[in-house]
Image (cartoon, rainbow, N blue to C red; front, side, top):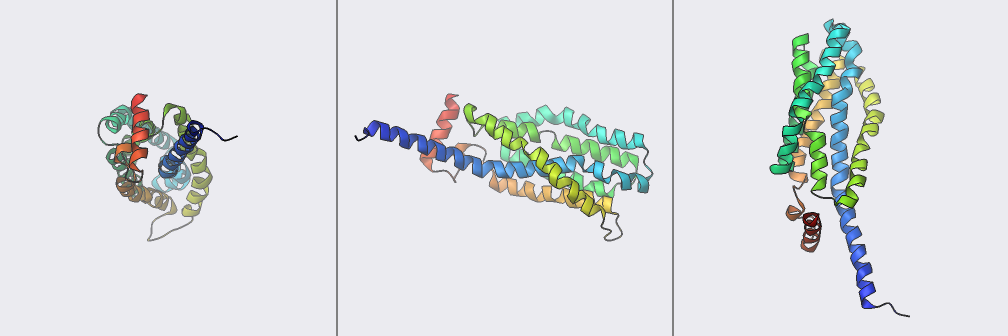
Length: 232
């Protein structure tokens, strides 16, 4: 018994939808996960550098604790404004600005000399990174339907355990170097901060703000996902 043309078209339509979803996922999520891994490493590597840094700069536990915590004050102040810009302006441009800024500040952490510089650098790092995580969550809503969004966010969040898996041994390895007269803890900040600058530039060219601008999707596929999101 042959299937009716209507049923065949329905199956083809479902298969086409799955291909569109898979292509969007493959295009966006690996890159966004990579960005989050770098961001998380730059956020927590002060803990790996702390032992050598406190000895060399004569930082007390109070100085280290306040400097580590002030990051979240800057993060709190600028989180909502940054997220709004992702929605109302350009996600691609704003995320690139965030990534480049935090990369520069994270790298400069390798050159601090006193508590004041430490506090300023950590506050600025929090302020620079503030809109990244919520901004990506908003960005995912530009690409994934409600029924697909939870899975996309869960995959994105997988970057946190992955960053711990790779961040700790990487930082430990860098702590053992002593190049150009700089201690290993300084190289932890420099070498782990600089990749964010490069990735920020890549973000400008790789990410696409919304489906209607996606040259890597066929016109009919752009129209379908745009219509689905608009209907929601």
